[in-house]
Length: 90
Image (tube, rainbow, N blue to C red; front, side, top):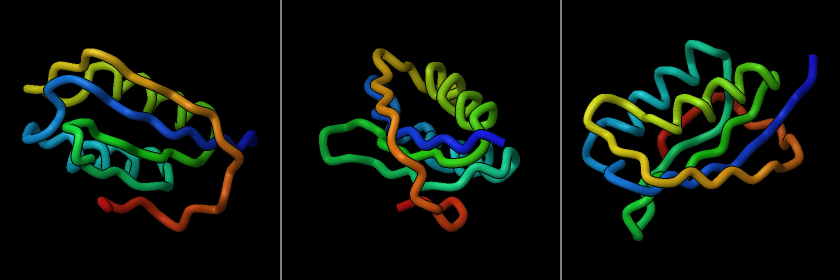
C-alpha cells in the first residue's frame, strides 16, 4: 500500500453547490482521510490522504465537482502523509 497526501485548491463556481458535502461523502466511501473547507477567496481547499489510487480518484473528481459546480482550475500539491484522522468539513 502506497500512502499519499495532496492539498488541492479548486477555483471556479465551487461554493454554494454542495462541493464540501459531496467531497466528504466521496472521501468516506473511498476510505480517504483529510478535510475540505470554503476559503474566503471563493475557492474550495481540501487535503486528501490515503492509498494512492483513492487519493488520485478524489483529485480527478475535484476536476469536475458535483452537479452545479463549474471548475475553472485545480491546483494540486503533493505533501508528506501526516496521519489525518478521518475526513471532516472544516
